Length: 295
Image 1 (tube, rainbow, N blue to C red):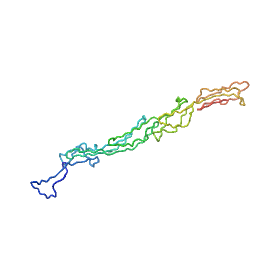
Image 2 (tube, one colour):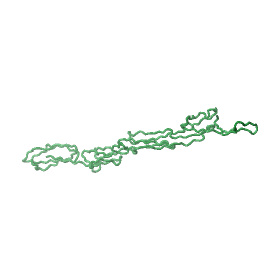
Image 3 (cartoon, one colour):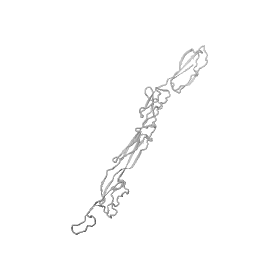
Image 4 (cartoon, rainbow, N blue to C red):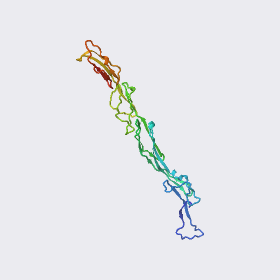
């Protein structure tokens, strides 16, 4: 009852007779041990007697508490860089991922040995959320392996703003007031942007190459070259057979896309002739090279 166990004794079959001299019966005992694991059906309680039938029994040490024999594992994925759209951390937890045991002396109540931690845990992966206007450095994160020495594993996914399409003039300078659309993020891959993006319309300018653009780097701006539109305005004065009666007049000015014009009052006196009609006396310039000719 005091925590001992039998090793051997001199009793053979119970028929021996005691004699006073030289015939002692020796019973050999040793300290009993107890190995405690976190999966014991009945967990021990520190401070409670080790040997319940012994009124002077030592008590279980604090090392025997189950919480000292288990260790959880976690995987944390941090997200940074997308401002107030940045996702919250994703955490996976494995309870009791690592375990160990202790062995105690039931007579002395002391810890004899404690095993090394055992176990490993490989966590699942997490798809990186798609945030429009930003690209991430990883499509998938996680899948990390935790060990007893490194039970809390971490990884960081970094977002950065997508680049833009930037209309530029023939000198490579950004065109004032032009729309600069941000690349949309690929909805199926947060590390990429959507290919074949249509280029913006710029009033008064025509793109050198109107083909859609596929950015080579999702984080860098792409200059899109344009040439400035040229607008002309010419008046001709002719007879009914189409012969010019007076030199043509160039009425060109610093027109731009959307500008209107009106040459209603531009007919002039030509000796020997009377005005029959004027054609196309009003109009508006569109978005492209254009010369308006009035007869």
